[in-house]
Image (cartoon, rainbow, N blue to C red):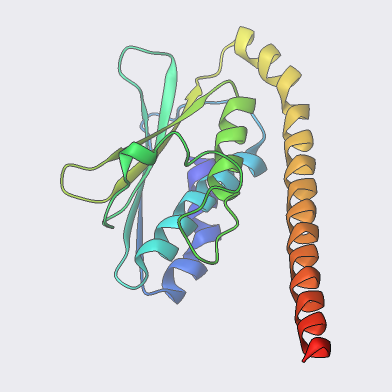
Amino acid sequence: QQLLSEVKAGADAMVSLHKAELTVTLPEPDIEILGNKTALASAIQNLIHNSVQHIGAGAQIEICAQRDTGTDTVRISVSDNGPGVDLSQASKLFEPFYTTKSQGTGLGLAVVNSVAHSHKGRVDVSNNETGGACFSMLLPISSEHSSLQIEEHTSELQSHSDLVCRLLLEKKKNQQKKKKKKYNRHLYSTRMS
C-alpha cells in the first residue's frame, strides 16, 4: 500500500495538470514485495505518464495491485481508457529507443521492463475488454529466499540507470552529428551557388 500511495502522491500534479483522473485500488491485506522502492515507484509513474501523454485530457487511469491467481507474484497494473496498444508491436515496445511518439525517446518502457527484470519479475501488456491499454508488472511476493535474490540484483538497477544515461548521451551525439552533416551540406551547396 505504501508504494502505491507514494506513486499516487507523486503523479497527482501531472494527472491534474492534464485534466486526467487517477484511481488506486490498494491490496487487502498488504502484499509485501522486496526491492528498490524508488525504482519501482518511478517505473509505475512512467506507465502513468505514458497514459496521460497518449490520451491527454479525459484520461482515466487506474492502478491496481493484487495477488496473481495461483502464483507467488503480485500484479501491479496500470490501465487506461485510451485507444489501446497494437499488440502486433508488443515485443518491440520494451526495446530501447522504440517509440510511436514523435517527441518520445523510446526509453520509458525499456526502463520499466529493466526495473521489473531486476526485481525478478516481468511486464505484460494487453488491451482491456472495454478499451484502453493495461501494462502490468508481475513481481515476486516477499519470502526469505526471494529477499536474498533481490539483494543480489538491486545493484543491477544502478547499472541499468547508468546504461540509460549512456544511451541518451549516445543518441544525442548521433543527432548532433546528423545536424552538423546537414549543416555542412547546406554550406557546401550555398557556396557552390
